[in-house]
Image (cartoon, rainbow, N blue to C red; front, top):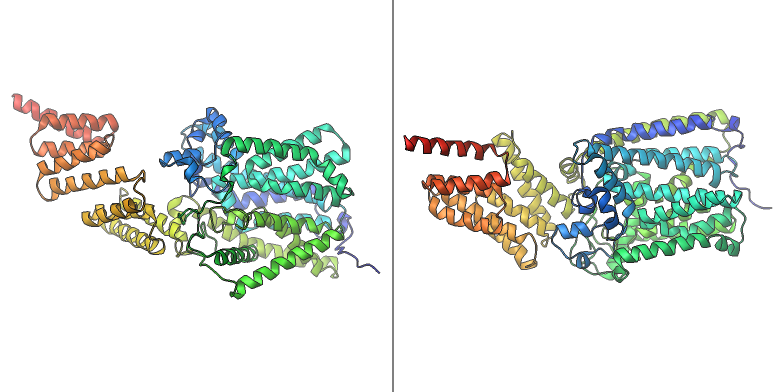
Length: 632
């Protein structure tokens, strides 16, 4: 006697827990998605938006930058901005994700430098997320779960759980993570139209399916899993044997070959070897032994499971040393290994039974495997956005077994239990998501909040210090507020350097802290530490200019030695000749030494570089009045 699969209810709508019309379900899902993420539209730029958008020359070029986007590593322009060699700094395997960058370039072309541009970009992210939600429901309802009794309820509950899961806040609220959303969207469209083509044999479905696969690959590398999933779905849902399923997938393999050519042209294949660089921000396992590295990677996979079940608290970064190195003697690591091996065996058994739930199991496993660091270093320990795809498999499995647990309960009771539970869970998730969206408003709000959530992250501490330093000189601050920000900057930067003594950016920001305090020897020490670690660092020249400039001001203003101060200020200009502030202060020093012609020239240079400088305009008027008085 064979064991029957779970049949929560007959397929008829009147026996479903969610017995709404299909149209109502789509509207409800869209409203829920919009309700959860509407406030993210008010956000600005944060985290990786800087490298991907603001300092990406190809994106800033608009339409004319699209050819370069298609032929370069996604971070090539940013590396150039930093003054670094793109080939030597390229992340392991390179990054070729042009589709989201093309969207950003189009947005740039349409709105230019409008103040509305960041809000428009956030709106695009929200709309893409809504499209993803609706596509998930369509795929589950009409394809994956179509032949499963109770599949309509599982499809709706799965999609609803996906839509409200707070772990998706990073993917939606951070503009850069549009690549995650587009990737999953086009993967689902590939599934749908490849199956439609097998069913109806209409060439338009094949064309749309192939185009969707190419777009999925150009969104992010996750789509490589479709080389397995396309024939897998043909085998599971269309009754093809393995050989026929693979044969039917050949056109998609041809698209993958085209993608490889495009990728090779942009990033090459020589970077596929993992480069063991010493930058802990991109190689968090640099100090780990091989055993510690693998054990910690397993621990991270367990942490993903924990966040999928209990998504609180959330953080923007888990880099060195927020997650300490682990060993296989840690029970949490061993438990994670056992759980994942169990999930793998379970998925294989489901596949042998041709149970469609096996798709959800392997969709979870394959996508989380890609971000595990096992095969290729991804340049990070973990990230909430990275589990966006895997979470789909997770919610399908969760929905299936939640409904199975109450399968023998009367229909009306099931409705009350499920709908009541979803209301409670939904309200809790709504509160967390809306609050988290607001924390993603900009770098300041994000890092100054998250530094208390991940206090051992060198990156978050470094950025929190930089943000406090920026806020310390904000106009409108009282002396007490400025000092509080300044002290916080000092604290966070020292903590960052305690965690990672080779954190170059933290040294540069700490140098600025000391320069503001007039502690020139301490500032010089910070400069020398960076010079010692990286003599060719592109930031050293400007750093040295700051030292000269501050020493010149100190002599000219505090020590009453303007002529000696002028010598150092002019040295700063030899390095940073386009700095309006340096020219202005040189003019003031000349004024106090009664070198009025030189002061006029310095003010002229100030206004050339900063035409709206009211201080320079007023000083120039004072000099003119002084000249007129002398003439009379």
